[in-house]
Length: 346
Image (cartoon, rainbow, N blue to C red):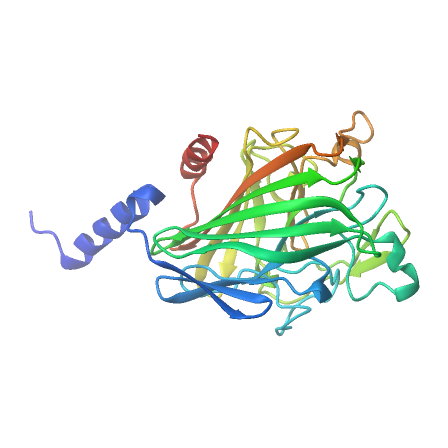
């Protein structure tokens, strides 16, 4: 039987897509300090993300973040607004890690939008040094920061290590963050935390209605509904929860997937068994906030239980997460994500 060239190419493409991520050829990761407060990460000779750590952002962030073919998977606003960008929640920038209530200070919601006379209620994460930059098949970027009040008194020391890798269709970020208390530190169970990612508009769940959100200080944010046809995202968790039903549920992993232009894109966050309160709760909003928060149990269970975290001076806690970005003719499968979760757990 004669097989056409088109059929052969189709078979090859399907085999490649079926290969485990680690079996695909790893691309070179290049990490370079480009300015005083910016480090750029390139994979396979293409820009992937930047590490921004100026104090004016109130926290260090990875921004923007791209898929392997260069598609932006993070929202542009407020740093480089793109057409169609929602302009709510100005503290949602790229990928970040912080929390709403540490010793009574709100680290999550701090941004340029908070009036000076109210800044005293908010915390700041100040990056003071880069501790490692290493390029290779796996790129490494590590830094030290202090979680402080407005007077720059340190509550926690943060040591974070990013490990970056990629193949023709995948980009992977492993984030390992250790927090060490400089004084007694109390994470009071709260909704907004801890690993946060603000997605590109195209990965939002389509919704024409406006939504109103009020934080614990009474600040109201309106998320405008949209009538355009570019939003196409939805969520899926390891426990089978989909769409807006993923919010407030537990799972080993959660992914968002949709179309950006003609490309299928998925972004998955994987929790780690050694993290506090594993498996995490998913603070996954249809408007584009994609967050893993193990310390928001009280609101996510409607008050049935809660999870506070206390550290005595000198004590430490470590959080580990894996973020996988995939683009191609189809998104990452449940089987593949389960395999990745099992590999990450080791």
